[in-house]
Amino acid sequence: MPRTPNEYVVHLLIEGGHREEVRFPTIQEFQKWYSNEFTPKAASNDFISVPIKNIQGEYLVVRPSRIIAIRVEPIFSSSVERF
Image (cartoon, rainbow, N blue to C red; front, side):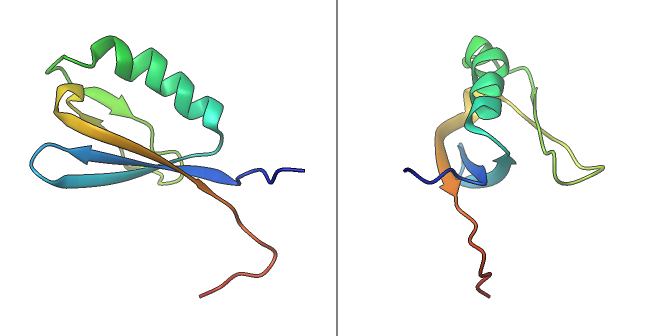
């Protein structure tokens, strides 16, 4: 039986070398944001909001035309935390 990730870390590589990391609880939530917010405005210079659900009071807006790569990484938590 395949393991299920506990969350997904999405790495946004932005023009100029800047990187941002955003977490989504499920791949479906990432896909929903990607297809509803990012894809329709991919060539736009208008800002779009990127959800930061686990950091209260903080938000990220980005110009989609400046994102040069997106990497989605599944995160698996185990019963034993390693530090």
